[in-house]
Amino acid sequence: MSVEELPELALCCDDSIVEGRSGCACRAKAVLPGGMRVRLSKTLAGILRHHPGRYGVRLSRDGWARVRDVVEGLRRAGWGWVEEWHVVGVALHDPKGRYELKEGLIRARYGHSIPVKVEPLPGEPPPTLYHGTTEERVELIMEKGIVRGRRLKVHLTSSLEDAIDTGLRHGSSVAVLVVDVECLKKRGLRVEKMSRTVYTVDWVPPECIVEVRRPGRGRSL
Image (cartoon, rainbow, N blue to C red; front, side, top):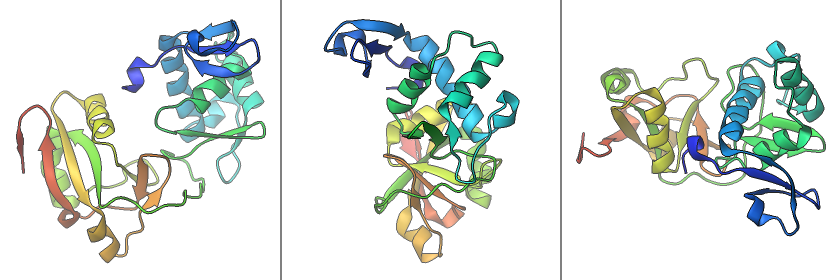
């Protein structure tokens, strides 16, 4: 499911948070509609990855912020309706595992442009990973490789669907780069698992891009 098409979140009478009010074992006390959930998720990502100071939020060295501080920052910025359960629910049910919760704290697991240190999850990457981009960028990437840009790391995914979704956020002419993980390892590049499907690396050299897929066009390079 695309991040643009998320179902509603429901706060149940037992204080559990589920996707869809029908998932409550008892009645739903409150509901966050899917569209508002998407908007909140995008804003939350901006706070925890790029500009916490705009919302008066402080991050620890490893990226943690207090959920209460995030809620207060959102309210000051015009999100007066936001409650803690909204933020917790968005993080708990994020389809890509963008967020992590711990004892009243929250952080983004990847995607940062500000210096934080988030430890990787255990587990080896699959042999092949993907990177979504646009047709216009392919020529330069095949010359220079995949570089970090404004982020701390290059982001790859084990999900072809997610790679296509990423490409669509940048334009309509989607290209998916297929990356050989063994090639990265042979060049001393460490691939780290940051969520269920997301992996990060410092750089992807051109020679480690083994294929360019063009979804819907039936051809590859």
